[in-house]
Length: 321
Ligand SMILES: Nc1ncnc2c1ncn2[C@@H]1O[C@H](COP(=O)(O)OP(=O)(O)OP(=O)(O)O)[C@@H](O)[C@H]1O
Ligand SMILES: O=P(O)(O)OC[C@H]1O[C@](O)(CO)[C@@H](O)[C@@H]1O
Ligand SMILES: [Mg+2]
Image 1 (cartoon, rainbow, N blue to C red):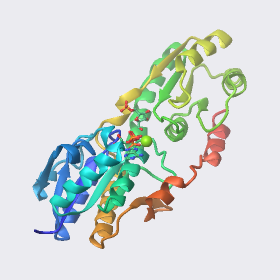
Image 2: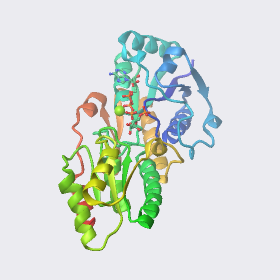
Image 3: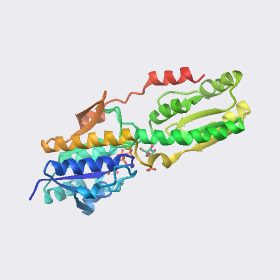
């Protein structure tokens, strides 16, 4: 039987996952592999939901959001017994390597499967940019551009009514989307889970200072990991007398056509993953470090501490006055 590879997407979907799938399929075929697409994350390996891909299986998906392979959070796969079952199934198809596109949880699954004898290479695919080992995760740029487009619209109406708008953006435990989006929309305040906040100091007094210089409408960005945007909105209205509205942007940030940055990054990472598997190397994570594509051992990658960009936060605060 010809040597084979497989690819799956797992965890929350992210724009650019399709571009990564396309890159893996095309680079895999280019390198002489039979390439299988596995449907619905790790569940596909347990349910034998898998299909051989050809060059045309991934035509016209580069610009599409979501994932043509579907995605899932598989509870079953957390158990060793099912990880062994998945590895046995891969062996029955002579699958010599698996590319897993997903977040940190999916990386743990890839490590488990590597330990069960199937070399896996993981790609960081999540809008949150919450993976310590990499400067960038596939989907981050698209999600932020979508958020900016939405908040620009919110600003139009906030400005027309002299209102304050509190906007909650995604990021489960991570303020990166909030920080960069906040800079891009000129937010008065940005509240992230990485920095302890005080509503009086970090929001109310900033609004008063800006009001004194003639500003009449305000945008406050809150990361999902902080939450409570409705309560924050009520508090601002109560303390300042400025009519305030809260908007939770939600899953709109997960969809849509990937930006150039996400398409190119996904393509580079997908090709790098196939290059490793073609050399028989598994249990690795592909990452971006200072503009270069690099790879790390999965455990090493998962153990890295995540750093918040405090300098960028200071930049945001300096210009938002
Ligand atoms: N410790 C683990 N061992 C084996 N498999 C795991 C483990 N943790 C997670 N997985 C597998 O990976 C899947 C996805 O993990 P999770 O739900 O944490 O999402 P993620 O990949 O971190 O993506 P995101 O957080 O961006 O949505 C899980 O449903 C499970 O199948
Ligand atoms: O798909 P679900 O379960 O709604 O997950 C939402 C979570 O996934 C993310 O979109 C990506 O991790 C987070 O920002 C958010 O908290
Ligand atoms: Mg995660």
